[in-house]
Image (cartoon, rainbow, N blue to C red):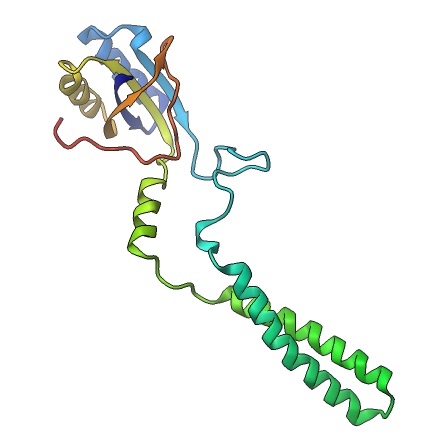
Length: 192
């Protein structure tokens, strides 16, 4: 694993200016990697798009929708059957009225239960969201460096307008940070 110091910039020009300042310090071109981090949800980790298999805020939604549909659907079926029975004596229209009432009730119950607020996150869920919340969108400048130069490189990145200066261990190959993961939140170094 290689030591990598990186920072996020607003534009490619700002990152290029920082790279020039680093090269004046003696950093070689093959120790610099500039790339763009897409916004959250736009990393196409799945063939249908997106970063995660499911939305974390949708936890429990399928069970809630089924329970709401079943409960209100049953009430709708009873109401539909009673209303239809008041207008006719035949069983076929009563069954049809019960079916229509069940359909309308189940739709209303599912939509109502899906629109309700979810319980607050547990402390573990909040910690997982912070850890796997990903990075903000922007231009990244990563620098492959040695431990004795990391503080000075971090200072140059910060002075050039870099934000979220981080220290990372990663695989550096042919001038690129190969195992960069945009879904992992950066571990910001406060001791630079």
